[in-house]
Length: 279
Image (tube, one colour):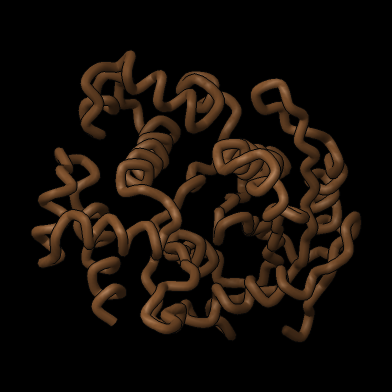
């Protein structure tokens, strides 16, 4: 339980200071623990470093500003604590694979690295065994729709093998490409979200199964096409489940993640859409 509290407090501190200077010793002080204890707990819980988490969250948030505001590149760089626009450009390109101008032209969805949500149910023997992410924006969008809509739930086929065979940096590139495929398949009324390590959701705004199929097919028709990473070609395929949701009628926030996760877990076939109409 102590490990969980340290992890939760660290996340809250980081998220509240993404636009301010962050010193790891200050995070530890806010969590009432030593820096070494903080770093050990953080690695257990997130499988990444504090520095990497902070960077990815800032670059995710900066993408929102690029798409949704008219802020200059310099203003965005300064907002997220980069020393210069040039330093920010290099970091942005490493994370997103494109320049900010290309991003604004070709991307709509920005949640590539959402906030981690601590969950006590994932504690096992004092060790944090997994993670959930913040899906409040997804929930709010569903709530704003009011009516029924299909949500397409995607995950990457055999993603564990990518990390084991090519490394986590290559895995990040594959995740980015998967997210881009989902985002590119969406029309202007749809939004894609990352809802887990290699899992994504697309709110279609559609109740017509034929049109839902067409949207899903735009993604899975690319199955087998490879992602290039440092001269290596890594095959990428996604599988998909579809669930009808209506926030106004039958889904609470506390249930939403589990509903989508169930659809993903039960989807085994590649190349077609699996429906969970009575989920």
